Amino acid sequence: MTGAPGDELVDIVDDDDRVVATVTRARMRAEGLLHRAVSIAVFGSDGRLLVHRRAETKDLWPGMWDIAAGGVVGAGESYLHAARREVAEELGIEPTDLELLGKARYADESVQLVGCGYRCVHDGPFTFTDGEIAEVRWVDRAGLEVLMAAEHFVPDSQRLLLPLLHLH
Image 1 (cartoon, rainbow, N blue to C red):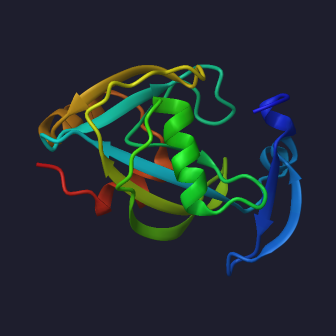
Image 2 (cartoon, helix red, strand yellow):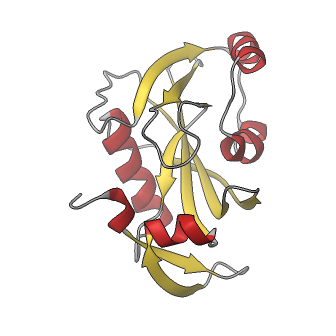
């Protein structure tokens, strides 16, 4: 990746997920434009889910916990390619078993997106070289419920991806 994150180009889509414009990430955020995003839930071979706390430097939901790695799909990039890129950038892994869980739209006062959710199984090791992740934990269902009761979680993956996960 070169340049500042705000300079990255992002495809803006319509309600049918058709590209209608390409703008900078900074403009997409400033104007709340509908764009594509991916979320990837990473499970260990023991069935636990890898959750993480986002860095305070993130442009959206800094410092919040998330149940998935992920991010914005770049201009001209497929959802699957973006999912592979995001887990490589954020976690330092290259899973071969990315499974598409679903696609849906999400909108709130901060963001509007069309998101694809994926899952994979990987036990690490993980490397956090891009600075987007401040802390990680492995959790089972009970551990996730305790953490969600105590901490703030990113709303889009919580609403779109969590119902599709089968945590033990």
